[in-house]
Length: 224
Image 1 (tube, rainbow, N blue to C red):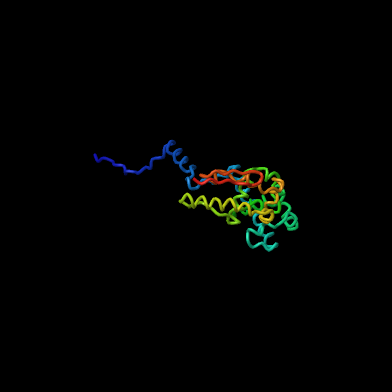
Image 2: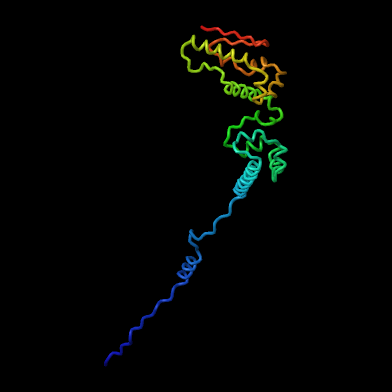
């Protein structure tokens, strides 16, 4: 008896429920590259806003400078508070920096070595700080080209240079202080140049020689 053979049928197996769930999870999982960028933190937003505000303030100050004919940074020294207030945005800038033209200008133009005493006015109590008085006197010596003993190796030569350096102080006049922004410093010392020199020129600057000062501005230098 001939056997009856059924034709072979190919049946595609249905996916299991576990496999379906796995593929759904893959489909629902986004690629790292497709993630939504995280929002900046509140602290970062504050920094960004501060930078933007500073840039805006700097642009306003530069516009005022162009209107006033400021070409060199040193020309800002002579700009008064009233001049700033008369220009658009100037009043708000002053308010933001404590109504101080010096603080405003020095803060926004920070790539220049500002000398506070060359502005129309120094901050209140500026000359009460000994470091500020010393800084002015050092700058005055450099500006007036006082003799320096630095680099002189021979003892006698150094002694001579120091003597000349000390004598340079005798040449100082009240006009030297006023012309270089030191009228307030002189007022602090009751218009006594001798007191100003004695208080701000450290004895160590004259080592290894003994430096003594008095109210009459008399000096004694001993050379070994």
